[in-house]
Length: 535
Ligand code: G6Q
Image (tube, rainbow, N blue to C red; front, side, top):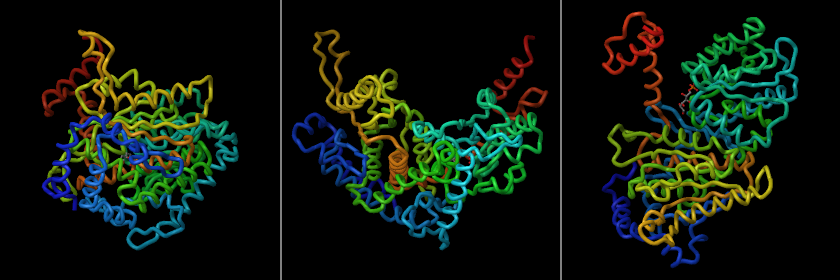
């Protein structure tokens, strides 16, 4: 049971909040020289410094009480036990099995899923080796040089983010591209410069019904068949899906279909064959290092006490700001160009998982849930939205993420980058009054007391990246538990998938649109008039 607003844990935090909210972090640091070591955690090469938050030891202890009252430990056990915690879809959420490197069985409905997981991993290895080694020949007998991943949402964001993040580990000679948008531009621009004879498409769709993916897959097939003939399709398509029949009907040969299971949610599927493009891009050894890293975070999440549990601590800090300070946003700023797509991945993970206003049992949520997650790489973000972080009227907690080693050590750039990483969180925390006389003084003053977490790793490699992504997955899960919501369904997205289908006939119909609201009819009819050309 999630604790209600009137539960002792919640009330204790409310009372505590009114006492600590006015405190400035600058003072908290002055009062406690040990604050950094008291409020930081380390697991492997990953350090989480959460000392620049508006918390005291008592805050953290009361927040841990809240987690206990919400039975975070029980839900964690249920998730790892493969129970059907995704109640509205009556499914387990067992993505942790995909990176279970412990040798222990993991079961859904009493059946160990690990043999099937291992079997798919070894098929992925064979596929990635064959492609990477040039042994996979297209229909004309030439090796494949380019792979195009077709998928959207969870079947796109994670793999695309990881492939880019692991650019330094890319296999030479093999281009990996991503097409997600139903806007034909995405496919057209991607296919420019590619040769059908040397291109292979991986269609990733758990359902194999997603309109965007099916449309893109059909366009890709037509392009391929147009160049090489229908008979060539089999050598140039693979699929990752829970619906093998639909993939076969599309024309993908059975030996090129990789299985997904209903207990794998889209936004946590990059660890499965949905990450096939990752395995192709960096090789299966690296892919398994990614799994190893995630597994290391899973073990930490399972075993560390709540107070010293990184995902739990991050989750509780988020709840603290969202539900007690009224914060509505959360910024994610990776100080690493290769992690450019991380904010988009975390945006989906967080907002699709916890962007809910009803609890598991269908009652209205008693408190605010997921924040608006946004971000951009540092230092670019500093020149875009940081002004608002420093001086805006809203409190926006931020996560800063950086590595001690760069993959590209050129002319002091990394020191400059890291100097910004350290300086920004410090400035947000301390603030500063301007050495300026009126009237400019108020404009230049930084109030400070703006919270951030800093995550510092040795180097962004596959293992560290796996840890980092799993850290956020579990953070989001814990927050869902505290809010009493099901983090694993996405009915808003499902509904959205159907909406365009009802409009499409009105667009294609020669008659003016009618019967929708007047705005929708008006827009469609104006669109038709524009498309028809000048009157
Ligand atoms: C993720 C969501 C959603 C999904 C896409 C693609 O958790 O469920 O983003 O991944 O809509 O769905 P398919 O994989 O079924 O095409």
